[in-house]
Image 1: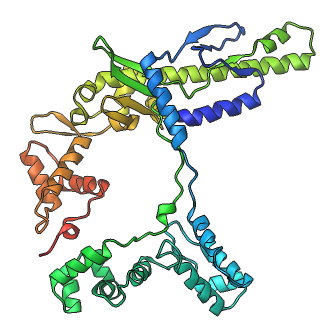
Image 2: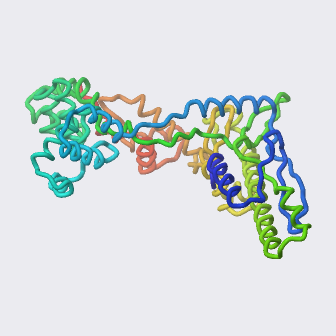
Length: 426
């Protein structure tokens, strides 16, 4: 189940626990198999073409060069506070509030709780909170989105503006995009409400702290490359660049033939067998991934020839039956794995989608249906957005049998709001 980089870490950890394991030179392409007789056999694995090796090397160098350590929201705020000349007690409360902010930059802890935990007065806590709310990014230190947006408007010199009134008096209506109701409540025109939302509110950040949210400094490493070679034949190549190649150290095998203590001999036998089993497990992992990739190429040849629009419905069970293994084996093997294709790098799971039937009986991938739904919504009249039922009817006319609830599900998965929230007013 481990990704290529995770497996690399696992191998290094195992090498520390098992002294009999040693890494082969980087130019070697063999891996030792297991065997109860402790005999030594080599298996070729992961042989790359020179072009693939060169391309992989460039990607590897770019990946390492582009990794940077990210600054957390708390570090960013504390650095600013360091420029203030604050009394010790006030500084401690400010740092406590900063450390209590959630990932969005909001303070969910009640003021009374802050007073209790810092052992100070309500006045000092209030003063400390105002200092935090003056820091960059603007809007941190608030108790919710509504308060954060109003503070951002204040810093944009929009206090008491129509945008401020919309948020302070009609926030629930704003969340539901009820433009006409907002205009009626505030006794202004629909056009002025739309302008305030477009020009003043839409530029605000509802989660000012999220931009500092920590992300793993780890790129996507394709485990397999599927491409056409110079002869026009489809080729499947494993990417073993990030996986250290192991063998059992000859020194430890030679020690078994010498006159050593029984307990030492038993220890070496145990570690050698454990090492061989570990090596064989890696070998089996690579062979399974390669076999899945070859089966995937066969089942989704339309995708590799024509692109994502030719993706067909495919289940884990179909691949498992073709390989003669259990479905859970395939599920584990494709977890956190990626394949490099002529159309980009895709997760293995991308190729496994359920399908819908057309009126002709042909099965259509759900991924293609989602693209059609997005395309229909992007081309709709924004003043009269299409309901899920109307979208379903349109697809049915295009020979796709689909229910309204399925459209609703796909729309939500695409992150597209309901028709009532997509409506734009004059």
